[in-house]
Image (cartoon, rainbow, N blue to C red; front, top):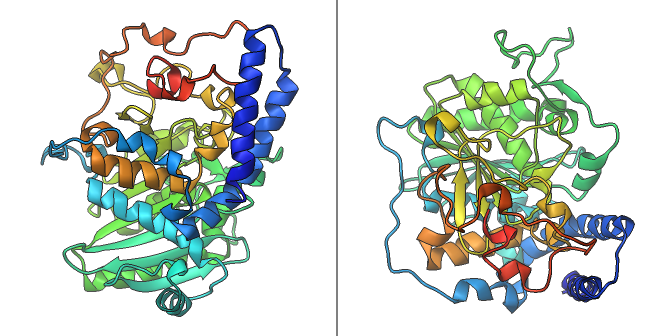
Length: 428
């Protein structure tokens, strides 16, 4: 509640300035930037608090868009025996399971072991206890503020999952002027990097993200816990997940595990609000791994998936969650030869214009409300069943016109933008 009050005030301010601008007023780029920085600073800590509180901590108006329609149609997952694992859209139930875990792990901050997690969950409902039949094999919150747990569930769930949380210092990692690339994986004493394939020596990733997973031997603790489970239950699915910085960690871990277990072990990574991680060589290498399925869910104009700068690129498929529908974009950039679309023009810059939603849309509870509540009411609208095709343009406008230019310097869009399906936020 303490967070939502200034957000509501900022939203009112934004609407007021939009009207002023329409009548001749003018807002400077500096004010636009200050608003962005304010919301970017507020959002991470609010995510932690709201994740612990659950949906009951969210204002009712955030639930309203999903109460307007309900579909009785059944949803059918895509993918056949001939479809590579990396191209098969994940089941809705698996997505929801990993989303809940990605939200619940925030409530475990301050704990130091699996015993603490289980004890706290049993004693205090606000600590979000693990699923009733889940076993915790590793919980670590190290000095770098990397928070990870490894849990498993028996049949019918039959999985072992590595789940990461974000961090309250995430904005600093993303915007630090000293952002640098480094070779993927841990660095040995002799300066070599054992996870960098000899055939792809140029792959590099964000140094801060890489350190969060591989410094201080954390990855090998995760690997040991996962291996112990799979040795006993080789048929279990191997999953990774996370939100924000945890989303980046989940991808790095999935790729590392693919090397540790080899090409015969499928690994599914589903994450939420993930930033760009590595260079183009990294993208080419990861996207060629047919046994690693990476699905990055993006809530509307969440700003984090558009960061860091353009030197970094995305891997895996983008699932864009919008007010009117949810669409999957083939490996983010599309494939013209196969007729599969990438994200539409303007996708990268929209959050820098749609203020103040860019910070609020990053909160983990916004993802929970959309996918758990919205998609459960209307699965075909709010969960993808196929990839977006290049010739799919249902708004009646050329693709380049999906984001109309502004003829003034208004902060954000005109009133009613967020619910108007002719505008950008709902045509993604």
